[in-house]
Length: 84
Image (cartoon, rainbow, N blue to C red; front, side, top):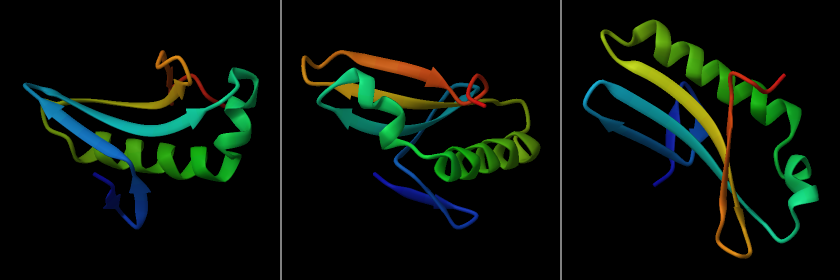
């Protein structure tokens, strides 16, 4: 379910125990097209949301990932902390 946080849309926000995870999900027909599907501005907006949630979180670990779903249904997670 898509959710807006500070005006930025995030595909999924999952929370369990002391952990909250933001997920931006993209379907790919070819893995080499991964970063055509997520632009620099979108990554910057997602990081903004991630940092905002981390500042507001109390005793919760907050993580963010871009998840690529390939045709063969394999999932690839890329941490927003690792993306420039």
